[in-house]
Image (tube, rainbow, N blue to C red):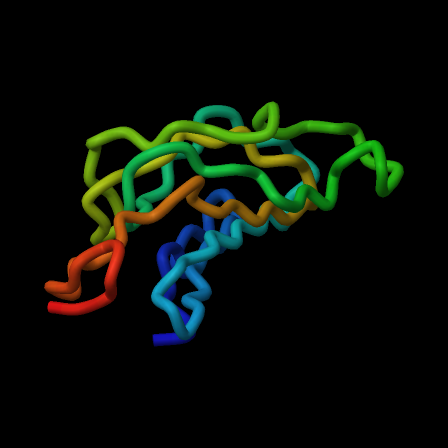
Length: 119
């Protein structure tokens, strides 16, 4: 897939979100808040359950930001949103970008023995 819009029409909050997919089918969620206002409890749909790690926060103290973020990660809930089966409730930093990655993804069964690699 490569790229998939999640939120491209939130003109009121000036928030955009999209998924970047690796060739192995692993998603990264990218969220941008284009206002100087932090967004509390902003729910965004995600494709897989579990913990989503905040792997990048442009508002981090590391980059001389105000350090508004999600404490390193958030758990996806079984609340559908934006065409996805799950969603995360995020704190969006002002004028910032977040990148989140799921902790682990379910591996598809290939019908092979786990130890020998034979079907």
